[in-house]
Image (cartoon, rainbow, N blue to C red; front, side, top):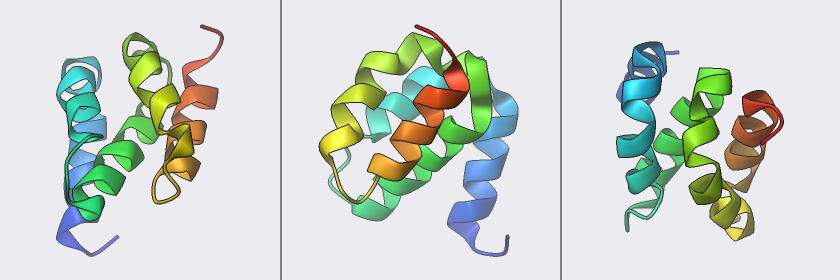
Length: 79
């Protein structure tokens, strides 16, 4: 993982639950790279993202981040 966006995604995932809501807000950012990095970070968090499940579910229709949103939902567990 070398790119700055990947490193940022890793760092935010490490922060965990406190970063979930700010990351969920970034899912609506106009820049697709920002949106993808936010979705990737959420996918790395696991159960802590349950609080932002509705935001992730909205993004299942966005082709550029749907794969990460789906992974985040699966890792969050039953909602």
